[in-house]
Length: 190
Image (tube, rainbow, N blue to C red; front, side, top):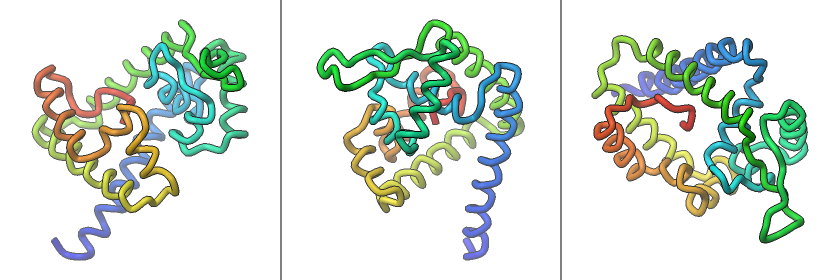
């Protein structure tokens, strides 16, 4: 591959990501959810019933604590999340999805799956698996470079979803998708 083709790949990845976010944002408007809010809801959802400490969520989402607090305040006011004291440390608040938050997240997933099927139109399932594997490898390489200070350590010692960023995780995800018949990109988790 020529040097300028590699550079174009970077621009293409950026453009696809930007266009995909914009398309998803447009589809979220009827739900009254902003990009930042759906990002927080998705981050909280990855932790299930245990919830996630606000400080850990800030690290996972690479957001400042003050910015995240404002987002959580707005989501809590609308009934999508709730803060609960951590049973092991009362000084820590864990963020949990409410039933209303789970309902809107289910709608978001349906919209995301519908959109992904349109985005992936004309791309074979094998090409989707290959693309996902390549992107997971690129992500792991960027994390290994520690481009976001502390990201490498958080990814190595963080939750299970974060650990899937490595190449082994990509292989496991492909195998799961083949076993279940799911298509790459069917979730909002990546």
